Image 1 (cartoon, rainbow, N blue to C red):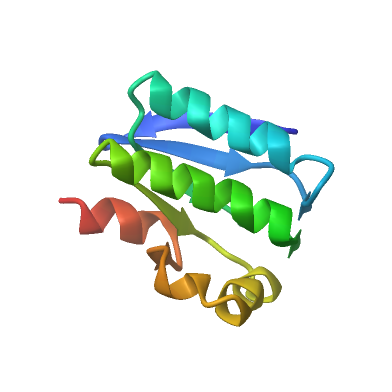
Image 2: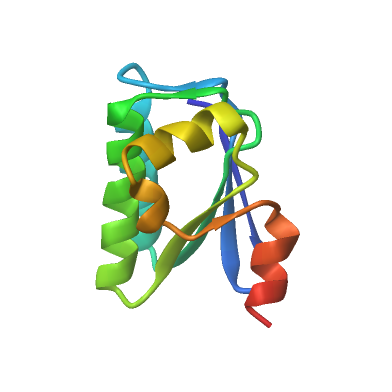
Length: 112
């Protein structure tokens, strides 16, 4: 899985550079997020602007990261979601669980 990350304003920005998050790569995403959290990165923004499709295993990987960050008094939020991916969050009602921001700048300004 092609992932990039950088620190910005106290957040770890995790850019997913894939068009799909599905059974083929969701395990790697889950393991990467858990590893980052274990290393102390408990405030994570997952930037999804390149993702055009997500299935239940992808949603599960993100939910796992959300729960693990919350267990350490941190948070995992989502930004830059394309409409077709956002519809999956709405369909599963996970949009009520995750903080979802239209743009990364909204997350960073919200933390000030």
